[in-house]
Image (cartoon, rainbow, N blue to C red; front, side, top):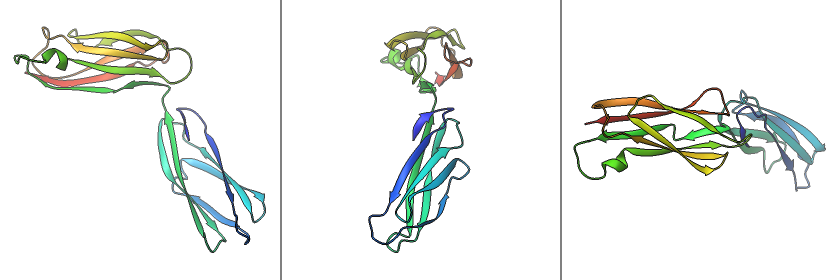
Length: 194
């Protein structure tokens, strides 16, 4: 099951025997009971059942596990059903951290290329996305917004100004303010200037 942070998801699985012997499901268990609920219903006695699975947690992240059904079948006394639930954010920035590594400002070559990195800001559903403001934490960090898909996806180009770079290790951030949430998206920048 795949959805978004805050969603209550539901999925139904049908279990039916094709054998002549009756099938009774005697027990249902899971290794992620604290994260899901499930309900077994008899559709046709000793023949067909449905199992409805719902997520308890609506927080962003993954739920992985198994649901085990104990049955009266001699051929299949245990049925293991793999479970995968992904709840993603509606608004994402990827990557959330940029590593510039060690930058030698005295070296010739592709310094300009090493000073520029990109992140993607994407709205997965809901109203159109507008980037209201981008605020770097230092004056030597420059940004440019490029539209990929108007209202849905933008690329933010982050460039370190080679003429203003301070020497030594740095950990800075770029805050991206949008119309979609009160808290800004934050991109962390790390590196070391030689």
